[in-house]
Length: 435
Image (cartoon, rainbow, N blue to C red; front, side):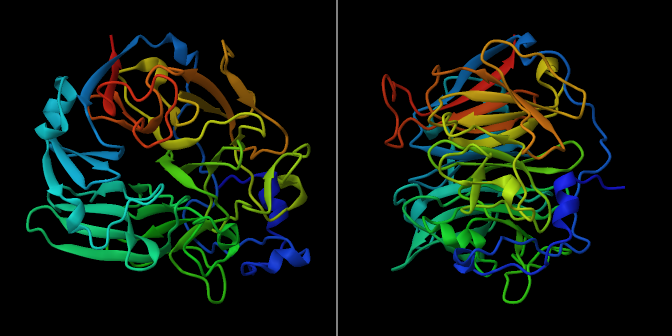
């Protein structure tokens, strides 16, 4: 049986049609879609135990595996390979054993499997460029890479292409995602359902996030061929069937719990960064709502029954600037098992977020923060412990490796670093492994 929030029960009584962009100015509320039988619209009975104790109990050391990247954005471990994108470039392929066992590597130790000029109309304006990368679930038997990138053919847009690393065939499977100098989203991940999940930003046009006919400000769920994934929610007439959730600002983090529940992280406006549990057909409120009852600028989630709140909102005063996320499931670092890790750009911090159910509370130590306000999504309580504050600079992505280590990409050459960054050797791929 699927578990739902009290807020979900209330929202289910709302109309099942969703207004197009602009309609909210007349005082109407955002609405839910009809999720039908879509997967993920509730929280399954837990099949995993939340982490216990403190993440600070972990004995971990950081090793620079690769130095000298030019604005790396994403990485993917697959079979014998590790793929890394560079925002102003293409896709690099490293040998997996070299990445897991060695240090002192450089980008020249990798093979360029897809150059920037091989991506049609590729453009690295502002925050865009070559962004997310994912591999087919059956890689290398199915030798397909999936790349999210920004294109400029007279109009800025974002695309996803499928690239066969064996024969060099490149095929667009998703086109026409609105693009801009900022808020391009860009994360790709294959879910436990073998569907390709795609995060898109609002392309600096917040109204698009409430428009079900637009691909902006959304999480999409598609097949490897680019078709709508089976059982996607129905957002009504003229909506795009590839949309799984909408009402997002600039989501760049995507991961799944051991119970296959999708989690997303997104950038907020002037702080107000969020981590959310995704539910089929849900509306996450941007740009109508963005905080609690005391927010001085945005309406509160509690004022709109049909809007799903996050499990974590950093408040108007704290900025994480979250990008890539990973749910750690390995045994190599026991104190980190079953915790969500969130990369912070402006905060220059890796956050270990413990998700617990009612009555379970991990210890609060140091600068840890518990997010338990009554207006947040009550399916989980999130407790965040910061790591590496300012030690490596801006952190773009985190990924669990096959060796049980966590791998971090820095982003200190993207024009937004300050202080001592960028340093010699930036940008880097770091391996966090047990001592």
